[in-house]
Image (cartoon, rainbow, N blue to C red; front, side, top):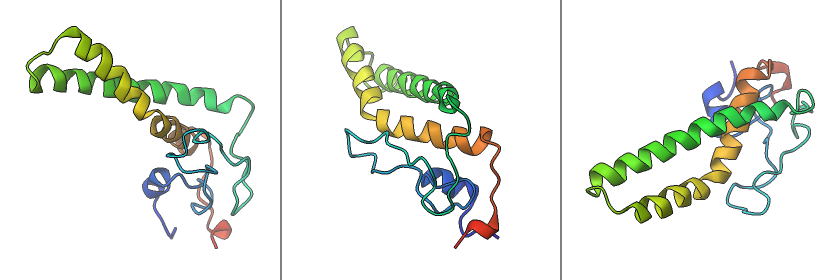
Length: 127
């Protein structure tokens, strides 16, 4: 039985094979380096990029998240703030999307690797 579940490994950005090694080198709040991934898992040595260009597919997940945030923000502004002027939408929506960009980027890559990477949890790599 794995120490942490697949869902927890996704939320904590852990390796899909050992569920212990970090996928990213820095915290998402480190603005200039939030996108730096380890090439290999520091715990089990798994190569994260399954094939060249593998993470281009994560853009679809990132796009979906951004659209969901955009629509949610627009609905909150429309219904919660009695449909403010257009300039409020133009400033608020892109600002929120940009603020969550580091989280969206990381989460989309982690989800894509865990779901489409074809990598299963292997107990022998857990320490």
